[in-house]
Length: 403
Ligand code: AMP
Ligand code: MG
Image (cartoon, rainbow, N blue to C red; front, side, top):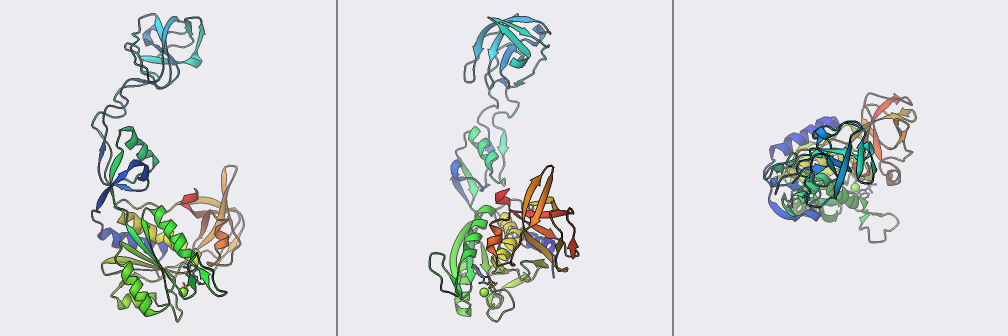
């Protein structure tokens, strides 16, 4: 059985092999968060477009200013003003953060290092040429590439695009991820379940995880545990870029997903991983598309998506796969787990002084969604550890949307 790292490597290899250019579409800046850029973005002018003061203070000729110097303040420049006040020797100009430094001045002295009476400003320290000024064009030249195709657009990248006036960006289309739950007991979340039925929470969590991973969820509802229904809905899912199934991959009599996939010609790259929850997770390809069969217990579905599917979505988006959001913490209490599998235990990580402390939550196994309401991560217990002590360092797979 593969370790989860080997399983991830398999996905990186297999999906990476098929990585090609994606179709692109124009996206308005306000909608572009999480898209992968398909164009380069260049500056429309120099940045900054003028010598910019980075402090409130006085614009001076640095050579004029020694400790104890007094200069006459001849005016004021605020952000947005034209810097048309020429500065003469023996004078200074009151200047605000973000304002253009007037011609001739070569330093800004912070207000905190001055005192003022009337128009006379006394300087406590010497001034150094260039201080508290960002020189024109020092951040970027006009026409310089500041964002490149293949970058994922986060808030910083969007701000940069906004700064240079790129209000519409050519982006790679998000991978379309078909989501299909399985199980005779599953009913839509809108309907009232019968006593022995349960609502389709996996389709909801999977759609949210697909969005967080940068994909576009395509909800295909639920397939009954019957070969004909499964085959029909799987075929529909194979029309999208990626198909993610939940349930039906364990050893039970009605766990038919692998069989049906095989009958449709699927090739499997793994069909078990040495983890708990999530051991029966399946990854393969069918009709030229990648397919994941995730175990149906909700926490298993969530953990295996984070460990495996998110990486495939990254690759299919046309960008570099992101690392797992692992953090180091200390165990709040001792742990006892069955060795042989790597465990991912719902946990609450909290700061205590300079330490992060991870407390495993009481739970009733991988069907216990209630535990997730309190967990901001999963403690990762190595497969060779039967017990771990309180205070031991431990890795925690964080829920990145809560970080
Ligand atoms: P399975 O992997 O099909 O054996 O399902 C394992 C457990 O997960 C069962 O208790 C199912 O009822 C539950 N389960 C399966 N699919 C879903 C779903 N879509 N939403 C919520 N729970 C599910
Ligand atoms: Mg089932």
